[in-house]
Length: 356
Ligand SMILES: NC(=O)c1ccc[n+]([C@@H]2O[C@H](COP(=O)([O-])OP(=O)(O)OC[C@H]3O[C@@H](n4cnc5c(N)ncnc54)[C@H](O)[C@@H]3O)[C@@H](O)[C@H]2O)c1
Ligand SMILES: O=C(O)C[C@H](O)C(=O)O
Image (cartoon, rainbow, N blue to C red; front, side, top):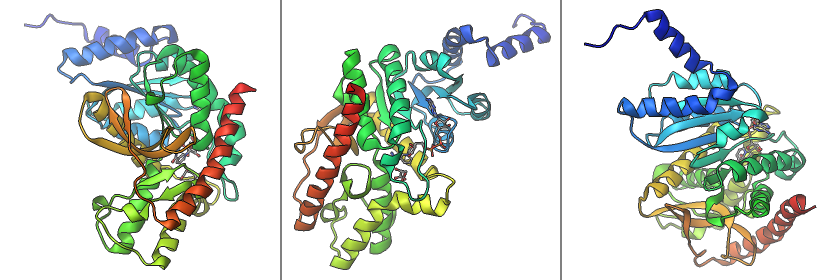
């Protein structure tokens, strides 16, 4: 028979786990994790979301909490994480959730994590380009990456904060300065471009969007978003009008949402979906699953540019292989030249921000 425990002591013990003093945060996080495993919870990966209380962060936290590969989920933001954490923690899925609030708790949020997802930063309003976010978001990404270099240098990083074409080079420079840079572990998330391309192409072809796969390469802003409509799977052909319509809609999908939201932000729900899907692909690769291929914006040798989005094969250590672009038609070759011109400037801007 179990020893009798005074119910008031039991309640006090639970309450102290829910509202621990800051200094005990990490210790209790470990305690709860081992509690969870002792009760039969499956071991899994430790994931942190930085910017977890935002428009993307909240639905992303919900989706990651539902991922059976995740055993521990850390939610970090400079505002509102206690509420978001309490809310998400009531979902009866396997992952244990812990909240971290403000810069003093950043290091505890990062310690021991396997995968870091970063949607921290300001979103666009109508009339703005993603590059207009640079001045605020560059500093946010730099600070968070300095924390990663210090507390979990071996983690895989999924970077969402815009302008992605510049924030990924910023992260790379920060990691280089800290001596922790491994290009296989730093991935700019462009999955939403692929999700949009699959959806819009499926609409035109009258297919189920889940059965369509469109490679989208280049970067994540305007003309740098280059859908390869000649490589759509299942193989198909388009009229010149369809190609013009689809390319324009895919390149401006983000602006379509920004304008529809009319000042209330940019894509959050579709982005959370895309980020959760991409994180799941990274985790399956880390687990050792074979044949996981996704498009992402990464340090690259596919073109002469140091960063470029293209198909990568994911594995235990992050990026295991960079797949070639494949044959491009004349329209795509012209698009690639335009994309490279803008990308080169955005990459340089990111690098200079850290070097200055
Ligand atoms: N890569 C993509 O495809 C893609 C898609 C959509 C949005 N985005 C970008 O994602 C970012 C977030 O968008 P959102 O709609 O969630 O914005 P949001 O304003 O709703 O949320 C951002 C969150 O970041 C937090 N934050 C700010 N500074 C922080 C810091 N120093 N540390 C931790 N958290 C911090 C804020 O408190 C807020 O909760 C934007 O830059 C947006 O442009 C990228
Ligand atoms: O368009 C934006 O500003 C957000 C994001 O990059 C998107 O593609 O939806």
